[in-house]
Structure formats: structure tokens, C-alpha cells
Picture 1: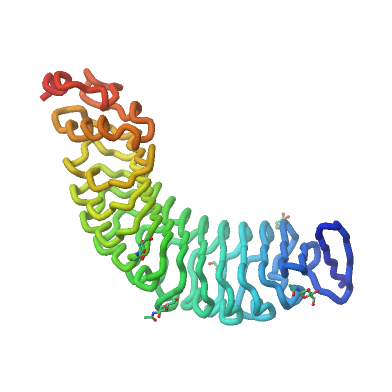
Picture 2: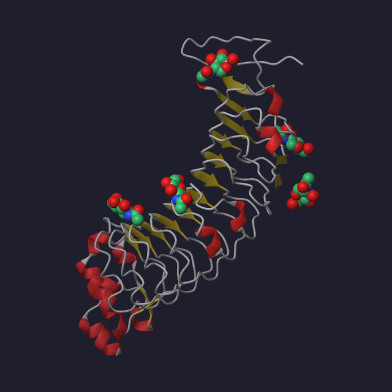
Length: 332
Ligand SMILES: *[C@@H]1O[C@H](CO)[C@@H](O)[C@H](O)[C@H]1NC(C)=O
Ligand SMILES: *[C@@H]1O[C@H](CO)[C@@H](O)[C@H](O)[C@H]1NC(C)=O
Ligand SMILES: *[C@@H]1O[C@H](CO)[C@@H](O)[C@H](O)[C@H]1NC(C)=O
Ligand SMILES: *[C@@H]1O[C@H](CO)[C@@H](O)[C@H](O)[C@H]1NC(C)=O
Ligand SMILES: *[C@@H]1O[C@H](CO)[C@@H](O)[C@H](O)[C@H]1NC(C)=O
């Protein structure tokens, strides 16, 4: 079979070498050792056709359904492997044993559900993306102890819980994305192993509340996304240690009140850094803390005039910030 190689350097020359390998219909940028196979009619990983010195490989929108260790062995210099939107269902155990330089593995948009022991061991992975698959449960034995992963994206799966044993293997993590899953509860000690955590995305899950100790160990947390859950109650000390937090999204939840003092520790919020919209605020005497806080910190709140009362009847639609003492007295 002839193999075609496309060069796209500044002079836009185009060569074809029979001796240099490049998988059919893929693009091989030999200068930077990069290969891109985009919407190519592949059903198997094109292992043998890849240039030996490939460091970056993208295979997207193909029909490959599994990969195993043997397929990756011929390209031991691989550093980045991007496998978006294929039909991957199976990965083998010890998948990364032959790629000791791999730092980025992106498996977004496949059909992965169950994965074997040690599937992400051996390589010095920093970025691991498992977004938009069919994963129902993650297992700590997928990873080695003291994993080097700093960026973990598990968003868009079917997770109902995250085992603490998994996070205990990730002491270097600074970004954790578990948005768009089915988490109903997270334990108090959940984040304890993640002292370096800076970004936590729990958006669009089924959380109703959080334990008061959940965020006590993550002093460097800077971005916290909690929107589109079912939060109806937050403990008073929840944000106690979050003096570095710049962004907090609490929009689209079921909050009718927040406890006195809840927002006081948030000294570093960005302008418009706090989103409280789309909650059913109950504007009775207990809204006073929120009202005063909003008046004092307007510039830190996203669209503060749209933080509105859902109850009582007489105040429906009124911006919380605009309430007066007499509005509240009438109702209290
Ligand atoms: C990779 O190998 C090919 C073929 O041997 C060579 O032409 C190319 O220059 C190499 N690329 C790098 C970055 O070394
Ligand atoms: C993948 O397989 C389907 C069904 O067999 C086919 O219609 C589609 O064209 C294939 N995609 C590619 C990129 O080959
Ligand atoms: C791949 O995964 C599918 C679905 O998870 C399973 O039915 C099939 O047996 C697996 N195949 C292999 C070779 O492991
Ligand atoms: C964990 O890994 C880091 C580097 O990734 C290393 O510096 C550290 O010594 C390791 N710690 C343990 C307990 O193995
Ligand atoms: C928190 O951030 C500071 C400043 O960036 C840094 O010096 C410190 O090491 C971080 N703490 C942890 C546990 O990563």
C-alpha cells in the first residue's frame, strides 16, 4: 500500500515519499513530529504506519473502538495523544507502558465505560481528560500511587460518586472537573488529599448540600463552580478557608436563605465573581444578611439586580438588594 505524506511548511511545498511512513489520509508534519488523522475511515489504531518519532498524535472522528499497549509501543517518544470523538470502548491494562514520555492523554467523546487496572500507570501523565464518555464509576486502581496528574477532567459521564481512594493518589492535582455528572453527595473528607487544588468544577450535578468541612483543606482554591445543582442549604463555615477564591458560581440552585456570615471569608472575589442568580430567595427577616452583603459588595456580584425574591407573594420579582427595612418588617 502506498503511503502518503503531506508537508505543510511555510513554503507550502508538498512531497510524497514512499519510504517515510504516514497512515493513509492522515497528515504528518515531520518537522514537529506531529500526526493528525481527522475523519479518516479507520477502524483500527494505525500503529505500524506512524513515524517512529511521532510526539503528538491526534486521531479524531474515526471508528476505532479499542487500543492496547501493543499499539502504542512503536512510538515511544509520544508526549501527547488526543483521541477525540472516536468509538473507543476498550483500553487495555498497562496501556501506557511503552510511552514513558506521555504527558497528555485526551479521550474526550468516546464510549468508555469500564476501564482495567493500571490503565493510566507507567507514563508521567499531567493531563488526563475522560470527558463525555459513559463512565459510571471511577476506580482508584486505574492510577499509580502518587500520580503526576495535575489536570483531571471527568465531566460529562454518569458518575454518582468519586472514591476518596482515587483522590488520595492525586496529590499534585490543581484542576478537578466533575461537572455534568450525577453526584448526589460528596463526603466531608473528599478534598483533603488535594492541598494544591485551584479549580473545582461540580456544576450540573445533584448536590443538595455540602458538608461544612468539605472545603477546609483547599486553601488555594481560586475557582469554584457549583451552579446547576440542587443546593438548598449551605453550612455557615463552608467557605471559611477560601480566602483566595476569585470566582464562585451558585446560580441555578434551590437556595432560599444563606446563613449569616457565609460570604464574609471571600476576600478575594473578582469583580462579578459571585453568581447567585436563579435561586428561589425567600425575602423575610432572614434575608437581611444577604441584603446587607449585596449592598456592600455589589461590584463583586454578577448582575446583582437579578438576585430577586421568589417569596413572599408581595415581594416576588423584587431585587433583594432593593429591599428596605419596612419591606422586611411588614413580613416579619
Ligand atoms: C522524524 O523522522 C523523520 C523521518 O525519519 C524525519 O524526516 C524528521 O525530521 C524527524 N523529525 C524530527 C523532529 O526529528
Ligand atoms: C464509521 O462507521 C459508520 C458505520 O459503519 C460509517 O457510516 C462511517 O462513515 C464511518 N466513519 C468513518 C470516519 O469512517
Ligand atoms: C469491549 O467493551 C465492550 C463494552 O464495554 C465489551 O462488550 C467487549 O467485550 C470488550 N471487548 C474486549 C475485547 O475487551
Ligand atoms: C511524588 O511524586 C513527586 C513528583 O511527581 C516526587 O517529587 C515525590 O517525591 C513523590 N512522593 C512520593 C511520596 O513518592
Ligand atoms: C498555594 O499557593 C501559593 C501561592 O501561589 C503557593 O506558594 C503554595 O505552595 C500553594 N500551596 C499549595 C499547597 O500548593
